[in-house]
Amino acid sequence: MYGKSYSACLYGVDGFIVEVEVDIANGLPQTTIIGLPDSAIRESTDRVKAALKNCGFRFPNRRITINLAPADLRKEGSSLDLAIALGILLSDEQLGLPDGRRFVAVGELSLDGTLRPVPGVLAMADCARRQGFDAMLVPPGNADEASLTGGLAVHALPHLSLLVPEQERAELASGKEKRYTFDAAGLLHQPGRPADTPETAAANEDYVDVLGQEQAKRALTIAAAGMHNILLSGPPGTGKTMLIKRLPGIMTELTDSEALEATKILSAAGRLQSARARQGLVRLRPFRSPHHTISPSGLAGGGTIPRPGEVSLAHRGVLFLDELPEFSRGTLEVLRQPLEDRNVTISRARAAFTFPAHFMLACSMNPCPCGGAPGPDGTSSCVCSPAAIARYRARISGPLLDRIDMQVEVPRPSTNELSASGMSSAALRIQVEAAARRQRERYRSLGIQVNSDLGGAALRRYAAPGKEARLLLDTAIGAMGLSMRSRDRILKLALTIADLADSDEIRSEHIAEALQYRQLDRKMPE
Image (cartoon, rainbow, N blue to C red; front, side, top):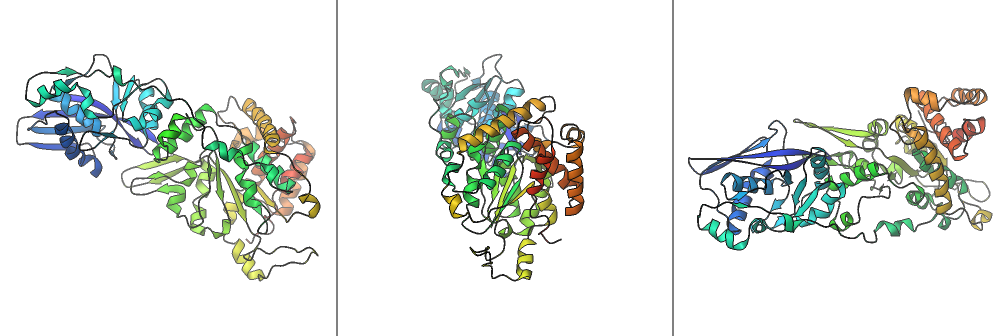
């Protein structure tokens, strides 16, 4: 007696289909699960047995073998409970499925048969859609999430007993040889109406609230237009944190593909709540601000069962590290690989997991441990020794600083600056969107969208400066002792400045402005 159902598991932040094969044979009563299950899946036999009995079904008192294919890929989590229960009912001929329907069953079973939601359903639904399945059976708490991909009929199953009518379950429990066909027509999920998103409140923070600091606002506009990494340095109270926290308000919305990527990561991390799923895919760019006590695995991802870290939760958005030198050096060094490769790879004994990590790094720091700055008369209020300042700045390694495109000083504003009202976030966003359109049109055949992603031959083709601009750049590189990586980043930054100026050529003034945003290169110790 053989039955088969389909389910899905997570592999990193992606889903993969699992074939659940059930064979019932004569022999001593025993249930065995093979196919590299983890402890949560091995324990599912007890949950499934209790759920079937409490829902009026009979659990076969025979030898049951359950195979999870592909057998060479490790399966983790409780998402296979429902498919295992269906496989047992199918192989014991207590249940039949409609002909011609291929659906994926995902959900955790409680002992009374209630279906509990599981993380990562959006990634599983996207995988099922791409592999040609036409329906998905999920707990009600995952129904809105599964509907986000489109192309799948989503059936919300609140309770295992709803697989067959109540009067027919009594006949099954009495031992009558009868097979019932599951009809999911009445369970078809209708996505709810979008509600006001919690992101609306964050969007109300405006750059008008930050008095002065027009140069820093200009730098942040450039960073948002090209997704360039940025570091703000200045004494406490000058508005560095306020400036960066308002950065998402001037950035473009996520495209459809980017929104699906960002929402899948939230789903895999278990952070996509049902209320959020009802509102659709995430459209505002993520903004993550971890505390400086975070561990390297918390930042990059990891754990016994690897899960996305902050660099992946900030995918297609902003990762804000406030007071950058307060982070441990070992924690900061894990940023070097994702800043270059746009992903992070976590290796374990059985497998290697790759998480997307395409983010914009935004940082802030004080000029010294005490945070002192020049006073009104030009004298310094700093009480730190030169050695203490050197140790403080040395917490940021040269290779990491080399990967930060813009290093901007944020001084205390003067009285005149405090009385002037600057540009609003809406006005700055118009500039950013115009530059973003130029970039999308320019790179429509390359598969990239922003200037910061340029590299190799594409960088030489699209970011070639004029003769005078090249001479200025080469002279400055030699005088400042910058690396070739810094040279490439200056070129990409100058290209974004040209896009904001609606210029088709990188001119000397664009190179000059880009060079101004490397203010810490000559101040940091080797």
